[in-house]
Image 1 (cartoon, chains in turn cyan, blue):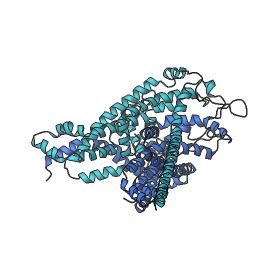
Image 2 (cartoon, each protein chain N blue to C red):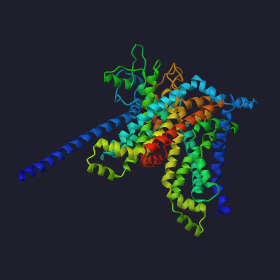
Image 3 (tube, one colour):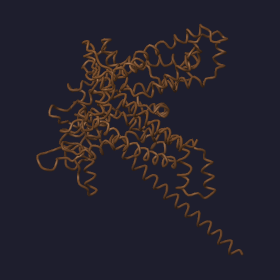
Length: 297
Length: 309
């Protein structure tokens, strides 16, 4: 009797031991797979950085070096001094367009979201539904006519053309309205009784409470300016107004189509750096904003 | 009762958005449809007083134009290849991430990294990784890091995107880059979904002695189906608008040296028609919209059937 019992206990231990081994093996497999995938994901960034500090001679070797023989930062000097890229100008243009369009866009978004969330007016729901419906239409459909429109307005090759057509984002209005709706209406009614104006209530109560969403919108909008390519190329691709991505794509390729890759990689690294800095410091807001949007920029 | 003062105030708050939307959203919808129905419409012509006939000529001409068919084929091909691959891979990574504790946040951050990049800039890095540098000899001086890896594995090097490269090699490069680019968003959404799944379902499965595979196919996937549907739909919508990733790798020529526009897409076609062939561009844009609309509806219908809330 007691023998059977000990055997049973031994069997139970055996089972838990195999389970433990299985668990360890699963964990090892999980970490191996994830580690491998993470390496693949990161590798292009690594390749960009090490290529940017190689000389062309080292770069074109048959057997590439995974760690440069010596760190040569002349490519970066060339990027900053280049007549081909005019990096300072591109940076200044992009930051200017990014900041102005973000500020104006936020004002418009906050005012519209407030009207849709708190004020009553005829046709509110119908109008909101119509707005959401426009989100399904691909942007290219608007671009064809907007190109004519800005031409008629005489806006070609100005900063206005890079800023104004994209100030209203239906998606951001939707996002902020949802956030505003979560703020209890009692707060608004109480403020009304106290004689607070709508504008003061918006500024003092709603904006602070919806700040995380507003920060998310700000970052995504700035990233949008930094990454925009097609529209700027169509309407303002002159030296005075060119934005950073447009400048980058064609730089450091000579007339025969031969590219100085290490210098090009240095330029790519310089352009990518601000995005990484923003990501490191504001990761939480970016990931939150993105998970609700699915829209890049 | 809505008092008139609040009416007036609401419209004041909305006025900047309404004015801009009328000019840059509502008017384009009307005008683009109109231009698409005026045969052979160009802005230049209309400024010079040319009268255009009403009809569906732009649509029929676009659909018969070989350049457009190439664009349509490339776009659909890239969509059909990249959406399933990236969704499957993202699901696999998300499930694995959800099963570990230490280093989870670090790995999650790493997997999100490609999202915060400029798709043109990093496209240039991918191009450099696949690029061969020719020398005097028969074998290129440098075959590129990807080919170095292939050769280390005992395979032959491939001309991925240089002069004389094959269409399928070009497509392979694009698939790799687009999948790499699409992973972060999908992982973020799917992992978020996994983390909100009620743990009790798994405990119940454990008590019943359900196998890991069965738990995955019978519990995880069904509970995650709304998120899977979401990433598939947004994936298709993004896929049909593919353009800048190709510019990143191949440049404005949308193809390898010696074979320009071989990888052109619908959006690329529309962009090149802007400013000279507005009737054609409008028709192409409406066709693109119709495709996106139909594919989204099909996706919604399929996911409604298979989605468990």
